[in-house]
Image (cartoon, rainbow, N blue to C red; front, side, top):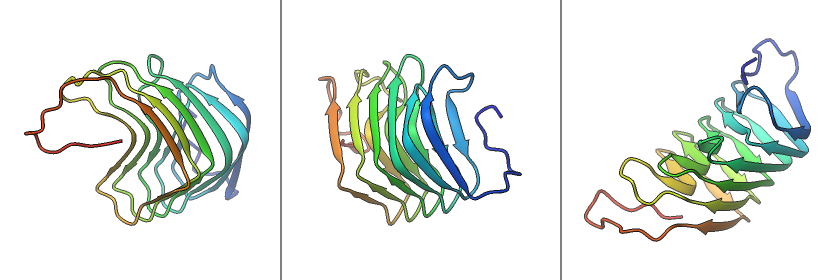
Length: 168
């Protein structure tokens, strides 16, 4: 309901199959340990939030996100021991928004394997807004393997004297 998985679902596996677009919700929140399989699912302007430990998101998934419709991360991982495999993300961000292809935040033991991220940032360096294909923050034991990142970033001034520089 409202994009959140019901807590009384009596099974441990969840399968996404087909196309997900024009839903009344723009994000699907996984809040319990589950084995999630995607059978070539297409997520159009729909994002996934993994807010539980011990989640596996496997199969083949395609995410196409227009930053004018949805902002923030396409896949947000806040749980420990999460595995994400075979995702394709095509994200064109809006100006002056927080935007990430994949955000891993305070999550340990995360594995992202065989991800393809096509990320077009449209932010021009407005303070307070960051946009990255992958952002890892306050996490440990994170493995990103066998992936491809194509990132288009606008030319803008960089303040090298600030608190550090994040890179794609």
